[in-house]
Length: 435
Image (cartoon, rainbow, N blue to C red):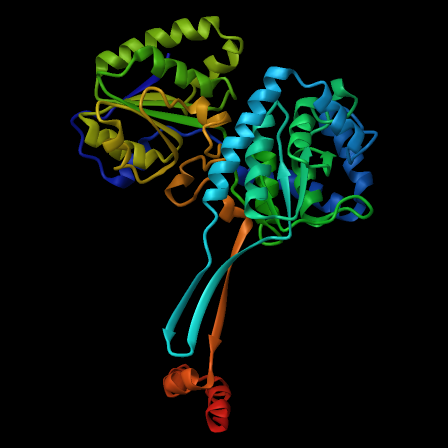
């Protein structure tokens, strides 16, 4: 079912590996031409544009662009008990982990009377996007909202597409998740227009935010690129992806199930097995065939698994598997090898690493405690997943007394003169003359 890429016997450079690893064919740049007029329209006409765009793209004109608080609370009252219990456990675990990762303030006395400190300050307002589309993602509400709350953000707005079957409101499970988290500012707005509304605001409806986070389709990614600089963003999320490093001792059924778990997201999802065992590769292929035949979203999964973005990559050994994984830079990377912890410690590029046979990606999707908003498309080579610092700014505090300034004043003047900025030096001299 999966394409095969045989790297055995080849000594490849990092550049060659980057050109070989499978990728989804997604061009955010092409989508910019579509989203830029949408952003301009929202900027010019606000709520009127949002209603018209909802009708155009979502097939429904929301009666309320901002969801009434009563409808949010009602959604929680009708939430299935098992789903509520799962969300509550996810909230607890994600919050516990993320609160613990808030960086502490630092203060360093560099010399007598010379102190430099750093404090992490939350942004004032964030916009969190929760996609609709092929699935419902209350888990994305948890990941985005809890992380922002753990960072101390005082104002949180959530946007999610209006659903025709729910009278132009976001999916009730999305609303229920917001209610559990105490979020009452929720908008029935989706796609690029939601990103525009959050970034530029809409008179009488929504104030602009400082940071926008959350996954979405290529048009959401393009809109986030278009407003970057006006606001901060987490990333331009692409189709989901999983890579599994496995050796001969791995359970082929587990590996196949995990590859399928991401393939059911999207026809463009990537599922990649990296293994030095051809026997395991054969077994996984057989297991995948059986699993896909019986899964609910078989057509979607079959398209994803058969696409250019998915493959089995055969390697000489675990060392080459690690090199391939680092070149791929997976959003989710599972390690199912004999010494999984040791192998995991050698990985440089991955959004999140799942160690051992009983730490599958779906655990992280929901309630492992980690965040599931992760870098895609190889951007894990330089980017992190969503975390509390996505909503924090590091602010420096410089506190020098007269004696401390005098001790280094001549050096500052010398450097200012070397850069031909004499007024900088004069600002120092004026103080030295007073002391």
